[in-house]
Image (cartoon, rainbow, N blue to C red):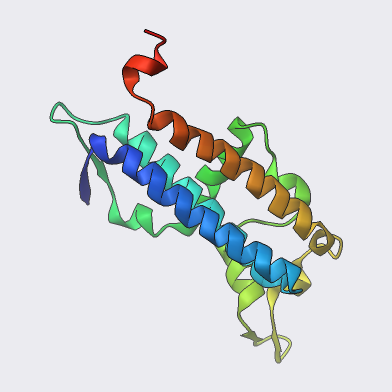
Length: 170
């Protein structure tokens, strides 16, 4: 269990944003060099970093009278939970990442990146065979949608740095 001061939420926004941005940049580089599977995996990790911020923001809304909130340690490492929260944030921003047809899960990420042994077929494989054959042609679209979401997060970061007196228009 992590007890975190609610005053650290702006820092979590900044750190999660820059982490997600760096992962997106790595994915964009991989995409340009033809590493589409690596790009998708990096963008899934970027989505999880956005989801981590959402997780922290939601937990901070339940802060106690001392201004502290709690987050389970396992939630920080729950890739699927963070991915779901990231997808929900994108939907809230009017961006549907699922329309590209690529499952944005940790299972897909590891399947795209790592070779596994299949006892049934007695073959080594990666999860690319589990993808819709046309989904890989939409990798660029996924990258562009991710960038739009990062721009929304960047705006949240910009707003969070404006003093409260100026935000309310006083």
